[in-house]
Image 1 (tube, rainbow, N blue to C red):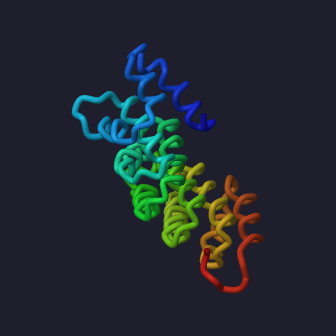
Image 2: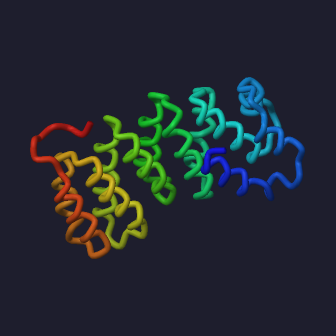
Amino acid sequence: MDEELRSLTDRLRDEADGSPAYERLIAVRNREELAAVLTRPGQPLWAREIAAFRLGLAGDRRAFEALVLLLNHRDPERCVSAAYALARLGDPRTARAAAALATNELRVAYALTPVRLLTELRAAESVPALITVLGRRLAAPGDPHWRVALACAEGLGTLGDPRARPVLEAARRHPRLTAAAAKALTLLRTDGAPAP
């Protein structure tokens, strides 16, 4: 069993509260049965999460909408599991959805996982979205979402795109971001090429 799937099933065992559907969803190999859980009315969240996660790992794009909703959930563990499955799903819509969630200022408290997913995806949307989010965090005096800003700085370093230089230079002046921004600046490519 995939280690992330094991972690997810351990986390959801108590939530399922002994339901026979829990064991069935973990063991079933039929994708149609998993997909039906996502469309059947009245399914509990834990069942939808298991089904979406397993379909995502299998590359079944019917999981996309459910996983994006979970990526935007208030429970950080659900967000992390959804991001893991989305990164393996291979759906071209994933980067656009992650960028939309990361840059939604009304949901900035939940932007950490979408920011990290954008870094992992290395998509065309990744660098512009991370620059936008980091710039907004820097522009808000006393912004409480410094962990989101830190993830952006680290992600921009990983992506190495020189377009990030101005926002990283600005981030270097913020005490909580100084080290990450300085490191990211050393990782930027100098060839002017966009991130892969």
